[in-house]
Image 1 (cartoon, helix red, strand yellow):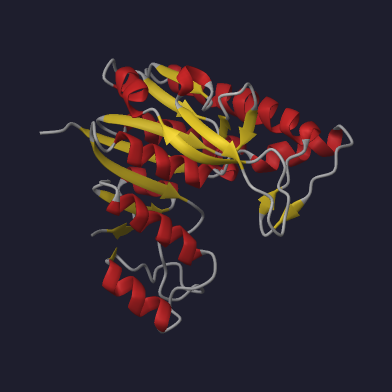
Image 2: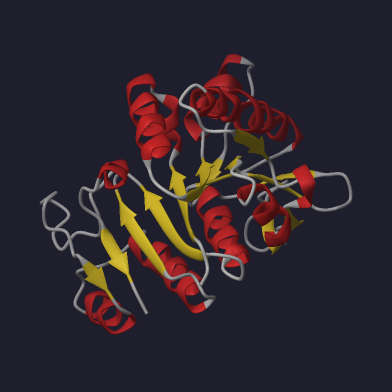
Length: 257
């Protein structure tokens, strides 16, 4: 029987504000079993870019990453945010290690092809080295993964943190019984976006199709759930969409096969 592993993806807002960061670190450190943390940091990157006179360009919610912006996100994601998280976890008794996709060759990507939009130095994941990550995890080392990958040719690439979490979960499914948790600002997938407590507790593929057809689920939640079912189909046991309070046992929507 495979050991259980939980992969937690947290948005930048959670790790960029001191009160929510400290709560997250305590909750994550107390969470039982093997675990991996994937984080964002976009607001801090935008702030630093502004301070340095570098324009931030966003298209469809995605950051356009030229060479100057790549330097910014590397400093912020792989340095400032990642190391604050790692130090905080060390202070709570977890032997954490900060990684980008280039470290140990854990996540290989290719530069996104130019179609309607040229996103610049943005990576689409090709392969996750699950064996390398598993070798750390089995030694009770907790990987903390920044949203940066590499192309194997010496170039770093800015890569969506949700995608990294999903692909990492798939890559580790051969080694562990994986649960993937996406933490965001809501308590879960909601029946009514204006009612924080209208959480849909469980969504299967059949229910997903029904909720999309009747308009209950729409907009940005659709691709998030499509990513969740992609992970399930690749061997991930379950995906949970929730606020960070789910680490203390509160709320959350479970996506199951």
